[in-house]
Image (cartoon, rainbow, N blue to C red):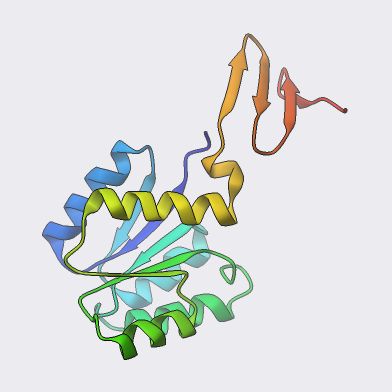
Length: 156
């Protein structure tokens, strides 16, 4: 399985530490920031496979970060999961209409969040969620239906 790159935008240090631990345990490469402006820069410099985004972060709100990520050609298709204490229906609808792929309200179960991230990645980036079978120098991507030998893709 390819190691998925996650951008975590969360200003609660204890929660960020907990999420980083859970996702690293699941073999994610996690980049973290507490700042909306910095999140945009980080996403442009190293496009993540998924973004976990708190609504209320420093300098630029998460909802505005979401809007700008969707407008940028380099990040328009990156899945975004809003992770916020704002749980009113109006807020959830606004987050989803702005471009979030999912909306999780605090408090939440870290196991459920890991499962939701996996589900979103399976839908939008199957290669990240797929299984690769390896024997000697032969690799078979069961989701992408590709076979490689010595790193070279074999034709059907």
